[in-house]
Image (cartoon, helix red, strand yellow):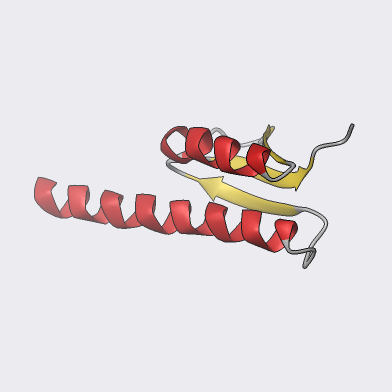
Amino acid sequence: MVQEQVRGGSRVLLRESRLVREAIALVASGGAKRVVIAGLRFADEVIDPAEGAAHEIGLRVRALSRAVDEGIDLAIEPIQE
Protein backbone atom coordinates (compact mmCIF):
# COMPACT_ATOMS: atom_id res chain seq x y z
CA MET A 1 0.00 0.00 0.00
CA VAL A 2 2.74 2.49 0.94
CA GLN A 3 4.72 1.61 -2.18
CA GLU A 4 1.66 2.33 -4.33
CA GLN A 5 1.30 5.75 -2.70
CA VAL A 6 4.97 6.52 -3.37
CA ARG A 7 4.63 5.51 -7.02
CA GLY A 8 1.43 7.54 -7.30
CA GLY A 9 3.13 10.53 -5.73
CA SER A 10 6.06 10.18 -8.11
CA ARG A 11 3.70 10.17 -11.09
CA VAL A 12 1.96 13.29 -9.79
CA LEU A 13 5.30 15.03 -9.27
CA LEU A 14 6.41 14.17 -12.82
CA ARG A 15 3.08 15.34 -14.25
CA GLU A 16 3.20 18.60 -12.33
CA SER A 17 6.81 19.23 -13.37
CA ARG A 18 5.82 18.69 -17.00
CA LEU A 19 2.83 21.03 -16.66
CA VAL A 20 5.02 23.81 -15.31
CA ARG A 21 7.64 23.34 -18.05
CA GLU A 22 4.94 23.37 -20.72
CA ALA A 23 3.37 26.52 -19.25
CA ILE A 24 6.77 28.23 -19.34
CA ALA A 25 7.22 27.18 -22.98
CA LEU A 26 3.74 28.42 -23.89
CA VAL A 27 4.31 31.88 -22.44
CA ALA A 28 7.85 32.05 -23.84
CA SER A 29 6.57 31.25 -27.34
CA GLY A 30 3.97 34.02 -27.19
CA GLY A 31 1.10 31.52 -27.27
CA ALA A 32 -0.23 33.00 -24.05
CA LYS A 33 0.48 36.16 -22.09
CA ARG A 34 0.06 34.40 -18.77
CA VAL A 35 -0.67 30.86 -17.62
CA VAL A 36 -2.06 29.86 -14.22
CA ILE A 37 -1.70 26.30 -12.99
CA ALA A 38 -4.03 25.56 -10.09
CA GLY A 39 -3.88 23.04 -7.28
CA LEU A 40 -0.31 21.78 -7.55
CA ARG A 41 0.44 19.29 -4.79
CA PHE A 42 4.22 19.24 -5.22
CA ALA A 43 4.93 22.93 -5.74
CA ASP A 44 7.84 22.84 -3.28
CA GLU A 45 9.62 20.36 -5.54
CA VAL A 46 8.83 22.07 -8.86
CA ILE A 47 8.95 25.77 -8.07
CA ASP A 48 12.74 26.22 -7.65
CA PRO A 49 13.74 24.60 -10.96
CA ALA A 50 10.82 26.36 -12.68
CA GLU A 51 11.85 29.76 -11.34
CA GLY A 52 15.39 29.28 -12.62
CA ALA A 53 14.30 28.17 -16.08
CA ALA A 54 11.69 30.92 -16.37
CA HIS A 55 14.00 33.69 -15.19
CA GLU A 56 16.61 32.77 -17.82
CA ILE A 57 14.09 33.57 -20.57
CA GLY A 58 12.52 36.68 -19.05
CA LEU A 59 9.61 35.06 -17.25
CA ARG A 60 8.70 34.65 -13.62
CA VAL A 61 6.89 32.02 -11.61
CA ARG A 62 4.65 33.52 -8.96
CA ALA A 63 2.77 31.68 -6.21
CA LEU A 64 -0.84 32.84 -5.93
CA SER A 65 -3.01 32.95 -2.83
CA ARG A 66 -5.63 30.23 -2.45
CA ALA A 67 -8.80 30.20 -0.42
CA VAL A 68 -8.24 26.49 0.24
CA ASP A 69 -5.09 25.21 1.94
CA GLU A 70 -4.71 22.24 -0.39
CA GLY A 71 -2.10 22.66 -3.09
CA ILE A 72 -0.74 25.86 -4.55
CA ASP A 73 -1.47 27.90 -7.66
CA LEU A 74 1.34 29.23 -9.84
CA ALA A 75 1.30 31.99 -12.44
CA ILE A 76 3.82 32.00 -15.27
CA GLU A 77 4.17 35.49 -16.75
CA PRO A 78 6.67 37.93 -18.25
CA ILE A 79 8.85 39.86 -15.84
CA GLN A 80 7.49 43.39 -15.71
CA GLU A 81 10.41 45.81 -15.75
